[in-house]
Length: 203
Image (tube, rainbow, N blue to C red):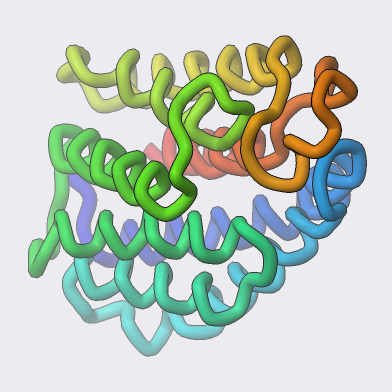
């Protein structure tokens, strides 16, 4: 089980990771997008980080919803609304729990995927973050051991990122490139994989 304090710690570590990788994520986005994914996402998580102390005693649903609303209001481009929606759906799913287990986390990931699909009007195979999120969820869904499940999820997400190099983008700015988007990995799939890595490492 992980409690609300651990969730706060994980969000802080995600913020550090995204900041550490912002130039790399922006470089990936320069190749096929607006060139702002890393900078925008890092800015959003800096703002999330500033709020963590004030919500550290709240239930996990409130913590995740606050994270989502902060990302929506501070991150430009597509990633703010998409990640923001994912976190808000996750918060709604958890509700007022102060502890969650691996089954709760799988439920969180499932509704986060639903949120991204609705907000982005996207499906798997269109060179988006879903190409990492959905394989991660599928590989974790049958596994009951938290550590094993998360490691399987990270491995599947990384494979999903590699897969995005082999397909043509049909969503977002990258879709304008058509076949020229081949050979480039999706920045959103990459940033999601970083987040999942942080969660796995924290356990």
